[in-house]
Length: 325
Image: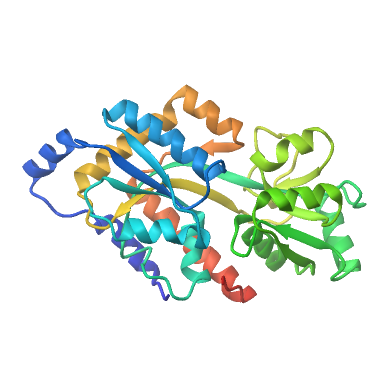
């Protein structure tokens, strides 16, 4: 799928144009019945956690049930396609992540267009990856890892949660910045990858905080760096990769998108309610427990974020020649 950057601006135009009085009336009445939030990943994972967190908040604040529906498969594309084909009335929403931005390049024959078929609604969080190694590996810093990998080309193995997963994308960016040669070992999810990392079957992994932090605190994994531009408050002694590789930044945003044509008044109402959630002390604390940072963006700002993420990851994916099956 070929996507011009300027097309991302169409997300803003995705809300239908209504007379001002009609928009106001619609905003006052929405929602009048239960709504669904589709998540493209299985129950129990971090995406599902966020979907249920925001669904509970929206239900409490807007007086109607927001029901999470899990539709795992194809890296989140099954859920995205279902939402793209849904009525643009605000009653079928997508729990969207950075995967939707890079899937546009990873997958060649999607039955929907992430730009044309969606409108940005709002964001919840942005999370880092954390570069970890098995403690048996004789490296304690990122420069030592790079040097060791270059001294032993093709000897180290780096796990991922599957082709096209966040750990895989973060590894490809790291590889493009450093030129190191490790053997990529894709697993079917983060759980099996971490199990083999702990057992020493693989040596390196870009984990999420949720999957790695307890093993790091227990000394079972060694944290070398976080992937965001600055250090993470939950692990303040762990450097950011940008301290060694200027400009390095890799993170996962989580937000809500709606089918193109969803009325702007509905989008605005949802965005305002989500912004209140991200400002709530309890929600902020839960996001911090997951190792992420609260993120509150307007639809316009969210549109720009997706555009920037698409550009960055499309370049990385094409340079690496990665294709999802």
